[in-house]
Each structure stands twice: as C-alpha cells, then as structure tokens.
Length: 284
Image (cartoon, rainbow, N blue to C red; front, side):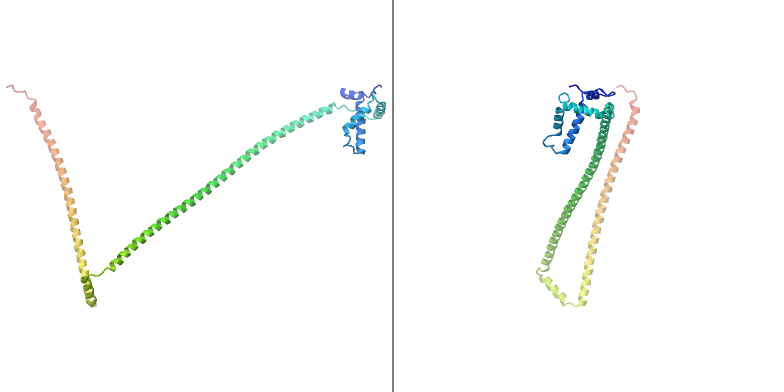
C-alpha cells in the first residue's frame, strides 16, 4: 500500500517528515478519537487515554490497514481547504528564548532573595544581639538590686544585733549599779551615824541651816586647800622641769664653748710653734 503524499512546501525537515509519513495526520485523528471516546464515557479507570491512543494508531496504521489509509485520504482532502501548516522552528526558538529568560529571571530572583535573606538574617542577628544584651543588663541590674537588698538586710540585722548587745550590756551595768546603790542604802548604820542622825532630827530648822552653812564652809575650805595644794605641786613640777631643761642647755653650751676654746688654743699654739720649727738646729 502506497503512502499518501501529504507534504507541503515551505516546511522544516522534521515537519516535512511528519507530513510525508502521514504520522501527523494520523496522530491528529487519533487524538480526536481519544478525546471523543473519553468525553462520551468515563473509562479512565479501565483503559487509560494513552493506551487507547496507542491501540487506535496500531489499528489504523495506513501501511497495514485499508481503513487507516482511507481515513488519511479523507483527512488530507479535508485539510486541503485549510491553511498551510506554519513552521514551528521559530516558535521552538522563541520557546527556548523564553525558557532561558525564565531561567535567568529565576536565577536573578533567587540571588535577590538570598541577598534579602542575608540582610534579613543580619538584621535579625543584630536585633537578637540587642535583645540579649538588654536582657543581660536587666538581669544584672536585678541581681545587683537583689544583692543590695541582701547586704542591706544583713547590715541592718548586724546593727540591730550589736545595738541589742549594747543595750543588754547597759542594762546589766545599770542593774549592777542599782543593786550596788541599794545594798549601800540598806547597809546597817553605825552607832555614831545613828547618834548623828538622832541629833540632826532633834535640831531646829535654824540649827540645821547653821550646820549646813558650816558644812558648806568647811567643804569649800577643803576644796580650796586641795586646789592650792595641787597648784603648788604643779608649780613645783613645772619649776623642776624648767630647771632641768635650763641646766641641760647650760651644760650643752658650756661643753660647746670648751670645744671651741680648745680648738682655738690648739690653732694658736700651732701657729706660734711654726716659726721655731724653721730655725737651724744647734749641734751639741
């Protein structure tokens, strides 16, 4: 069975081969049959479209099927009224250029996205570092405040303890002193003191006032005598100290004068004996 010449002038080598071998026409009819088949019935699960298309192409191969050759002839008569097929070479080149442009754009967008991601990562790192620094400073401040509070509490506790110990010691000393005063107050009174108190109790107000004046005068005289004695003793001590100081100074000055006089006499004697040493010696 002869092949139907379906070639058209002006086609590329691959397009011309598809047209000369009737494959393009047969494939187009097979696709239409497959589309019509699966639009009418839902047999996708039983027979996939690709399997149906392959089976249809084998059954209607114009080399081995008269029905297929007849279909190709009718298809070619119908296509003579259509416009000539366009050369798809330029279209493929355009597709390649578009694909290349898409790849370049994708690469550019990827590069820009990576740069943006790097900048965002750096900004995030800076923000995280600032946040961590702020958190660390806040924590340090809180720890410092806590330490200050603890130290203040410890110092306050120590101060209160020392104050309590001092108060306890003062209370003990006061208690001892009061006990001592109480014991002195309640000691038995001697006979002389008792007689004096009895006489004082029997004395009138005038006698008591006169006795108080006498006692005050006696006490004043005793105080003045004690002050005079202390002043006299102080004058003696000062005079003794000044005398010792003056005597030491006079002794030092006398010793210095003796040294100066001895030096002067030595120099004078040496000056007098110098001319005599120059005279000729007398032979015996």
